[in-house]
Image 1: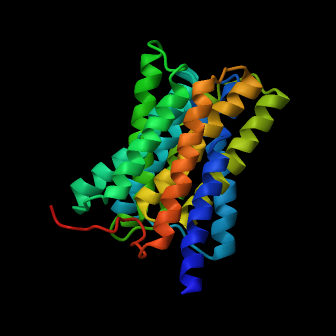
Image 2: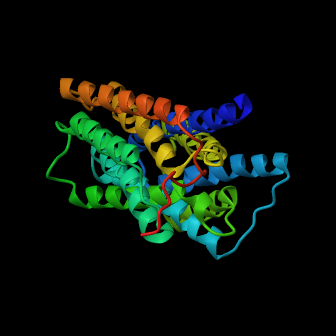
Length: 294
């Protein structure tokens, strides 16, 4: 019993640590004076080294089939649209719109797997979204429409990442590997045109590739083995809080008092949600407790 509980908590902890690493993305992308496609290609080339070492150490050979390819598209979409959005709008706009992912997880689970979300899932999603909106109410702008649309599409792709384990004959780490390959290749022509290789740019790129993409995705795939998709997407609520805070501190994008209220709402809701889930019956990884056919 205690071992089962530990496995559930271990998965949640891995997802939480992945979200912490993801949160440094906005700042690092902002300080690199390159095209968004160049940044995305460079960081994924570095990530492939990290993922490759992990696969070698675990003896896991990358697989490929149509479902793994579908997962790779979700990884590639999340990587690419998030990077482009950060260059075309504020970090706050990007992350708040990407954090529609929990809602997309519920919608996609309902459409493709006929899983009705539990009442707690719906309430938690609503409160978290409210908290995120409070956090960014002073930052959301009418401008940067293209960046905002790309960030929203990134949220849809990000939802697909949390559902990797639900795909038939899936292999999440293989999807990550091929998704990184796709991300690196499509941006390579842009990367080859860059000429400004400053120490800050190169250091930030290494941090992005090794930690914000490579190690973060490894932790996420480990966490998703024992963490339901909705739970995982809600635990990642720490990312939209920390991401703009880091950008505000080091890149002078301001955070107002209402943002702090939103931060408290997000963190508090995620903590309460997971405490309640831990006390309840175990859920199927990648799914929801209620699986009543629609």
